[in-house]
Image 1: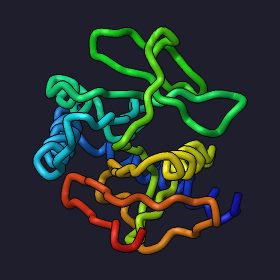
Image 2: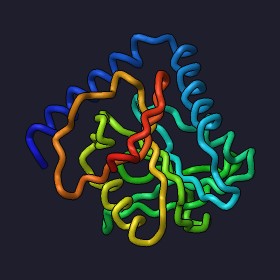
Image 3: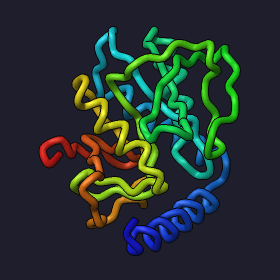
Image 4: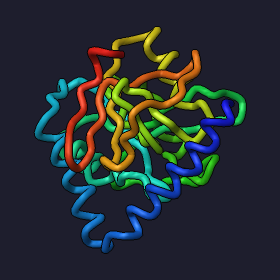
Amino acid sequence: MQPEKLLLRSRAKEQRKNFCNSLKETDLFKLHQLISWKVLNFFSFKPSDIIAGYWPKAEEVDSRPLLENLFLQKYEVVLPITSKENKTLLFRRWSPHNSLKMGLHNTFEPHENQPLLLPDILFIPLLSFDKQGHRLGYGGGYYDQTLSTLKKIKSITTIGLAYDIQHVNQLPIEPHDEALQWIVTEKKIYNLSEVV
């Protein structure tokens, strides 16, 4: 891992935390609702699409309003599960009615009794993003490995959910880094697919 990325990661976490702490809880909730609304009003998903979200931690954009809305629209929604043995995420079916368990890295994930499914659309958390669609994550490499694996199997659409303050001019990249096609923030929808 590049030392530059470690420093950027630390700064990005601090900036995101300060941004979220500067807002009232109700304003932050409205921001998450706005990002969800933008996604739902801009993108057209096929009825057969399997849509992967994430359960938010720390100051990540809360994707739960979006996932609940997609579930109500009868989409198959999945959440990632992590494994100690493998950097590739697996995805299990999620429903607002089912309980979750604590997984690795303090993330909530569906129980083993939920079926494994391969997503077509992935909503992805991040610390920073640039105009080329590169994202700075937490350094585990899970999403990079997962996107690389999925792209060999099927056509996928990748959408990062972020606050606009997370946009930077350029991130250092490594050969294994996977760029995203779209980023949705409270201010803008970034179409990055031309440069992916």
